[in-house]
Amino acid sequence: MSTCSSCGASFECGMADGPADVPCWCTQLPTLPPEAYVRNAGGGSAGCFCPDCLRALISRSLERPAAGDS
Ligand SMILES: [Zn+2]
Image 1 (tube, rainbow, N blue to C red):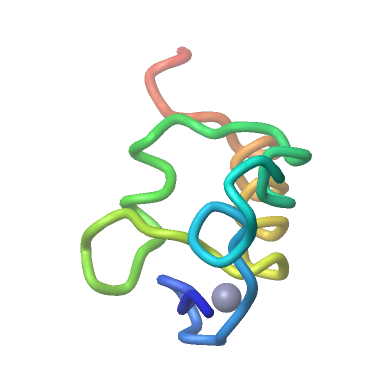
Image 2: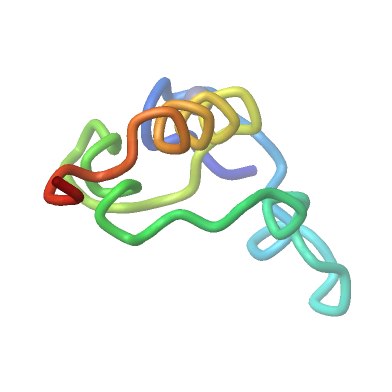
């Protein structure tokens, strides 16, 4: 089991828990820039997020793209 960096929930990570030849469910979701994960990780370091938090993080990031885009 892996622990969500945002809410602390336990979840299955394909990379950590599954067979090496099976991609993690998270590969099905859009990829965010690394800083998006770091900003939303409670401990200040990027890690894995549970499906709920990762989807929420992606939808938030897509709605509000990073600043600096004028
Ligand atoms: Zn979570």
